[in-house]
Image (cartoon, rainbow, N blue to C red; front, side, top):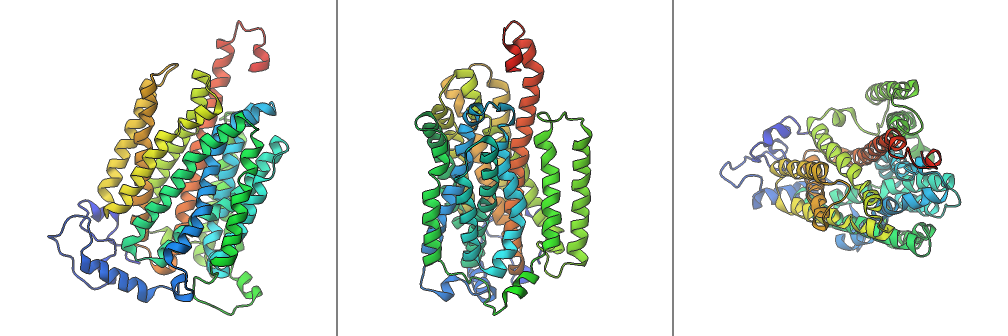
Length: 495
């Protein structure tokens, strides 16, 4: 894998997206920074076509655009789920008189996604992309239909998360299989637009349904497009994307790294649970939190040893995990997503508390950030550059959080609600450019695992951002409310 150059050589963006050693060609140092020459693009495409496994285009008459368009239905539904619940979780928890545990409606979904995500890349290589997509849609649809009590709703969110984990990662895996590396960013930007439209639609739709016919319909309404996605996938999307094999089911099952999956999933869960429990169910200094963090580190160490020295087909190869390019791309994306999603999870609640707005209006306040994500994602995919854009995206996001900290108090002017746009713009830029930087330096054999790892990082960052923000919010409320409500007759019931 051509990783010796690393992201450190990209300071002036003169390193092409594919390392030259892999192609045996020289780089023209006089060309524009960060842009591939036409000759290089041709070599990239040729190399990709010669080395890749048989793709959808090789096995059926469906066009690339047609197949990807079918999968976008699932991408839209999965992304609308998150913002839909962000806009309505306060009403759901209030209905069950359990506002303190309402944040589980947000974090249970991403916790389940983070735990399930690592396995999907490998399973799709073994059983086929379409088959695993059908499994994911089924989990997602069943989870959306569960909603009789807060506990059942949270359980349904877990089941939905098991399905939602595959919808985005499989799309990226198929894109990297179908198109040259040079075009991956462009296609990913289109997927980002659909995902962004889904996130933008979820908030207002969820708020509107909550205000009118009830929050349960915001979940049940997702079942119809999920069933449609199942039918389209079953009828039109071929299952064999990787090299065809005649392995028996027993042989396929033997290729699954169950021990590695269990260790990795348990380690992720042990790491994320304290972030959810601290400040709500438990204090930050409770011994259980420390034990879970220690267990997470121990499980991670054992997982790495198992993958390096025992597993025949690791979930994620040790060489990929030790790659500097993989580490930097995922680290940058993790920090950005955790900050952005943590902030966005509090925006509807902020307007409901400070301005007494309805759930519909509160959810609509997420639209400026979502618009920023759309523009940033398209720019990142089309530009052909990534080092400079990563730096610029970080500056945009930092300015957003600084403005919110300094200006958002108990009352703001209407135009100040637009402060969240730079944060969304920076988030969109990083999601596109970090993915391009990652896939440009990953071998074809590791591509599915790298895509799953990328989405695992995204899901983990989402859980960390939301859980940490919720824990801090609950901690501040618990410490400040008794003082603020000292003259209120029913303060004990509120606090």
